[in-house]
Length: 356
Image (cartoon, rainbow, N blue to C red; front, side, top):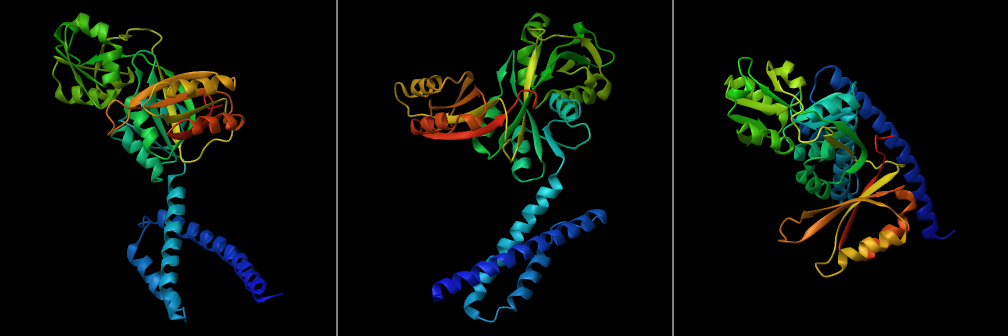
């Protein structure tokens, strides 16, 4: 055995020992985290990290290694914090809005026992999943009347998340006013822009002014706080009881089969499913998108939907969200051919309608 083989054998043995020590360290990290949670102590302590690094540097005898060992320790610390964030986010479900928002209703329906994290907007929900403050995010994606939610398409492109399931919620929109209000009193209606669109025929007949709000439940909160009988909100009937309002009109959406499709997003892809989706962009030239559609057809894959969205910073250029039938694991050859014919391709994972 020559010197190279001997050195490699030593490295392999050390790597094996390091793996065992790594597991012991992470087990200890779990115990520390559990103690801190039980005793209400801060999880992350920057001064403690610096102390650990400085103390461990003293064990290095060769000064040539100290700088590299310090960098190694920083990686160990970051890895440990990342793991702790994962543990802290377990079973946490994030949604946009306050109690009574349709996202909250769906989150509660899907995960009744899980801790909930309500946030201001869709972007914050995506960030909470990426930053491991939540394990799942529940996001409205598309409505049968008002179409897709553009901000969600943008976020699916921007953030490194996967779709883990899609679920449908039949939505009944109600007009909610103060206890002393009647339909004749209403002059202003507040709600999420999609909800205003879903009820546009009703609102036109009512002859009111509309104001867009971040979400339906926040609009209900606002109307309740104002106690002005000329103001009303559009939202779920549950908001009437939550915020002390009265249902002035029910089923005001344009179509009674008004249904919103929700996505559940997470950091890990699902292993099985009967649908999958991608986001892609193609060259801004004739026939580029047609070639992608031809490839999908060549592999006998049914395209459920295709949606376009402007690319930020590139006027009049678009990216495309494409959803297809089948298991992603059986479509790898198709995806390879698609990738050869587009400028960018992001696979959003495989999943099932209803999450089954």
